[in-house]
Image (cartoon, rainbow, N blue to C red; front, side):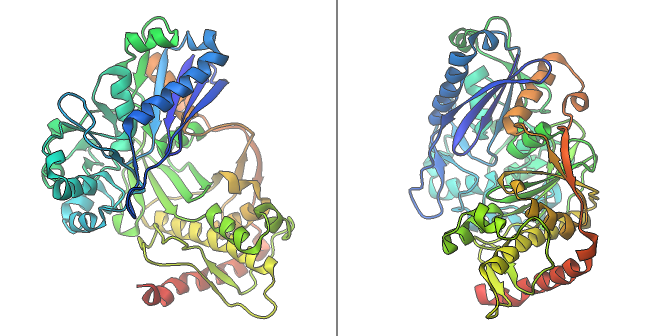
Length: 484
């Protein structure tokens, strides 16, 4: 058996798979987020350990015999978090999470240093790790002075599991300290935040061995023999391993709270000015690009709250057959936008309303607005050298056939639907645990799920969609001055 542990923001998921990658069982442990000030978002690392113990205990209660035969563990986790520990492995302060924006001033200052974009291939976003350490140095100097190691969230779990300070490439690429092309820490970028390589964990590939489970924990969980812990991956790269999005050109679109367009790359293709993330993948000699929109199903849920109708009822009013855009355009920038604008201040809008604009017309505009925002991501990825010929759809929004037809037509590529199953980060982490423990070929293990169907672009509407997308793109520069 192989165990995947996914440390999310709201909980830890533990998943058991067998040697044939069949899911045996899963269990969860819950987490809360602390927000002591506006823009702050923190968690106590001890809570991650508790939630992991809860999740593994849940598995042990249901599958004790299977858990006893675990040979490999893979880790996945929320990215960018700054977990600061001293020379005695004591946590110095709560972890500053990925969605904490307190270090926006420090991020701008670091991003102004051309070495950061040149070496990391990315804008220095406030959510990344380096500006958080710059904030701690400035506002909590007594804490900064005691920092012996900076660990990402999943790698703090690894320290608890194994006693080792180790990270891997995909998660470390989100710190603003990694030379992403060389897959190595940059001493220059670390020095720019008054840190050194000695304060960083060792680096391995996500498929490699990165420690062994401590005997004390193995005994507690009822596991006998040595258990290898894999390097693992950041959450999006782990999900890509679960989805089989690992070969050059393979891509998925995720319609969750936020939206992600993720493409695997066989080479390093940075273009930071596009606000596309260019990170290392969890597999050796593989990178990935990712565009992110901040409101995908969040936009439909907002519309649902305003109209008092459920999201399913709203999309149901549109029927199954894709309609031509009506002339009403929705900008889904309800909490700013990441790709391609990197604009935290911009806000959403309906444009083109008239007396005849019914609730269904507004719903259609919301779905199209998200589809056009994802098309913006596709254009950004293309400008950075990535070609996408088809995508697989995942996430809650992918249950709407109408929405997927709109996305297929907006992108001009087929959208594949995976057969039922859980192909998320915990499954991807378990796959990495299997690879590290057995030495199996990563490409042979990280295969895509069976496709249950494909939604093709509606060619009869491609011209109308292109016209509507041009209107959509013209609106951001037109309203930007009103928001800033």
